[in-house]
Amino acid sequence: MHEKYLGQLQKRSSKRKLTDRLVSFAAIACVVIVLIPLCSIIFEVVNRGGHVINWRFLTDIPRGFNTEINGGLGPSIQGTLILVGLASLVSVPVGILTGIYLSEFAGNGRFPSSVRLINDILNGMPSIVIGLLAFLTLVLAMGSYSVTAGAFALSIIMTPIVVRVTEESLKLIPMTVREAGHALGIQKWKVSMFVVLMAAKKGVLTGIVLGIARIAGETAPLLLTIGGTRSFFGGFDSSVDAIPVRIFQYARSPFDPANSAAWGGALILIVLVLIVSVALRLIVEGKSFGTKAHTL
Amino acid sequence: MTIGVAGNKDHKSIIATFMLKKRIKQDRIFRLILFAAGGYILFIMGLLFFTLSQGSIPVLEYMGLEFFYGIDWNTVEGRETYGILPYVIGTLLSSAIAMVIAVPVSLMIGVFLSEMTGPRVSTPISFIIEILASVPSVIYGLWAFFVFRFWLVDYVELPLHKAFGENIFLFARTPFGLDIFSAGIVLAIMIIPIISAVMREIMKTVPNSQREAAYSLGATRWEMVKTAIVPYAKSGLLGASILGLGRAIGETVLVTMIIGGAKGPLAIPDSLFSPSNTISALTAQNFAEASGLQLSALIGGALVLVILAFGINLLAHFMVSRMVKTVPTA
Image (cartoon, rainbow over all chains, first blue to last red; front, side):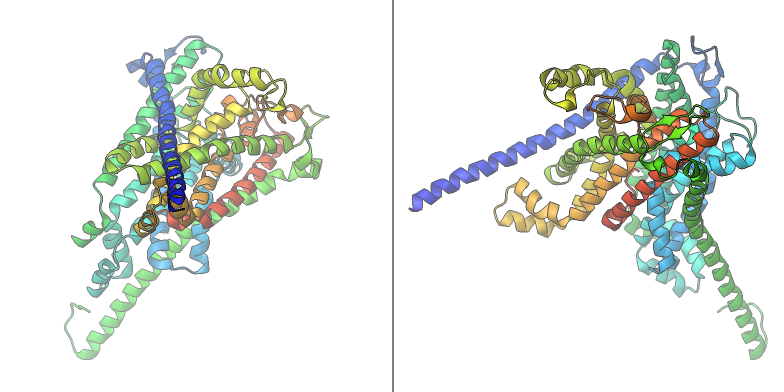
């Protein structure tokens, strides 16, 4: 009797172990499967885009009619930098102030809760819809496609990210830091801006960098707002170009040289985003909210 | 309270009250600025609904409710018809294909990173996955269009078609890579890094006592994950998946490049290998030449998309939001 149960138990236990092994194997396989596309993407972008990159490609305006690469992506690179810069100019202050509000001043009342909720939902809105919003407001009001409309769309995409990360970073700062400030008789707004925010600055910076990495590669909202052009920046009410939009257009072209230029643009874009991501990593790695706050 | 001016007691207290009032006023002003910043977020969301509703009035007046269930899309003047249904189907179907693949794979990756390996392995792999999550979708699209779809046709779609094409309608069409199946697969590749990064964070929030309890009852690692981790983190894991779904239904350029860009009744797929279209891709393809009624129809489509995304993210907010500390690279 006893032996019979023992045998059954052993059988079942070896089956359980087998399942465990199989699942572990499947997990490793999943990780490998996911790494394959990354390797392929990086390989193809470097391989196909690398040979078109030269000084002229980085600085000249696009010339020719897609049938030959003759010129470069200068205006697109400039346009992307201007768009991201302008969007950050709006998103960083608005995002940080909203984050401070939610973490330091608001509590859990109806208004702050709805700001949190709407912020999260806005963060998940399809970017093309945001582009349509910018088109229906700014482009129609100004009468033309413009860098302002593009930057407005990008700032709507970036702001919720900054808000969220700022709020979460500020909440990690221990209460004692705030109490120390208040005990010295410092006003609440100064405590928030110069003590709590400064203690959490690495977290906040992470949010900003995250937002920049996200909007630098956005394509859909720009398709509806910036118009696209072959010349350099010509004022806040005129069209600009952006790297992702240029990649998209060149990729849909039937001509090989244009496709090569798309890969070249992809290489530039991926290098930009990688630089931003690595910067993010460095910021995060050096961070430790608790200790930082205590050494204040 | 420090005051710089010497004087009798009354004088001092008057100045002190004055200073205090000034300080309180400063705080009030600051509070007002913060309130305005928070209000801005609500304002943008309100503006989104207002402008899209406003913009879709012409097409709704012209088509009536048929706009929502009609399947024809004709922009020729005089015979204009706009029905959004095929693109809603395409949107939901391509996202569903993506989710069917992405959720189990992401769960496995999450388990691998949080339960199977120490920081020496999981840190670099997490780093790589975060990079993947930050690759712009236009680059996924470029890669899918020029590289991946040929693999997919040769190694997945054609073999499936040859083996099952005659018997199962799902594989009936001769595949050539620009179809709803490839769109779903590439969407999955795009959202797996996003979902798995969040899932890893969520699994890490499960307290060790849960794991220890399962192990002390003799559970194997998989049984521990099944009985201790997954039930504890259920809502967070579900929320992470929904976040991925939100990304998939709104994705534009990648889908535009790979889904085949069908219009009207043709956009309703009759097999996995037929071309289709989504709401956002339709907008991207036709926006440049759209005006009048067609523009209004595209705006109406966007309104449908916004309502879909609003619902999905509302769900995700309540399930995941306060379990994850930072914004997933999203």
